[in-house]
Image 1 (cartoon, rainbow, N blue to C red):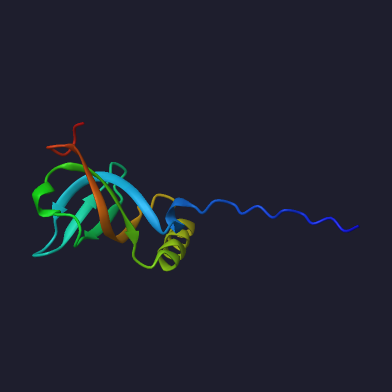
Image 2: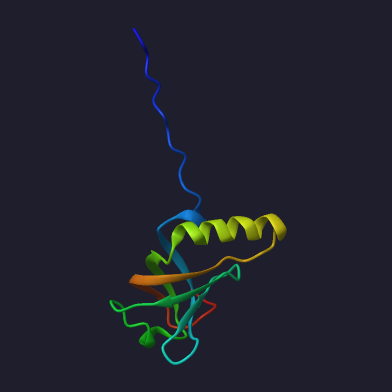
Length: 108
């Protein structure tokens, strides 16, 4: 009798996830461009057809969205981390959900 071993997949690192949830301060970064800056200094260029980002500029928000090209994003973040342990994550995301945490940035 042959025994089959169950293969367990290790969970993906956060930087390799297809969908991410990130919180921080939303700012306008150009005519139709928005940026989310997290407490640790990571930045996300964000866009959305489903969520009205403009009305939340200057607010602390939690965004859920699809990472643009997650495989490339993960590889880039892994490489960056090998050269600079203090490097901050930077990515692009299409937002599908927004939760307002505070009407101002820097406080809850």
